[in-house]
Length: 152
Image (cartoon, rainbow, N blue to C red; front, side):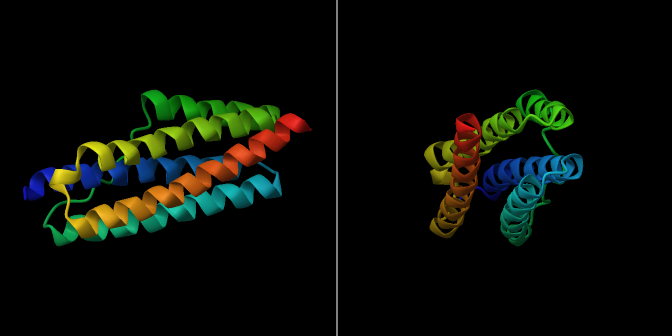
């Protein structure tokens, strides 16, 4: 197994989690709505947990964990949309933007599980599947809240 390739895959997931942490911490500071602050803190905590696990694995493999973000392209648009929606206090727009970001994170994990399994051990795949399920749960929370905002 190629440790360098494995480290690259794990660092991709660390970067996605860095994006979520930074984005949700920023969003939490921007909103005054307690329910959203709580949700953003929960999502940030999910990514902090995932990042710790991934970082530990990269370190174990002798690599250097990514400390950057992708705040470009897709993720940049998501967080700018969230910030604009928070400024306008538009709950549905905030949740739409969050769901878009959650889709991107979930899709990245899905792509790794689909395309990079040969570079990962069974233990690594299991960890990534567990993290993917946590992100799916966060996505579903946002989707449910968004659907309720539409109904209001």
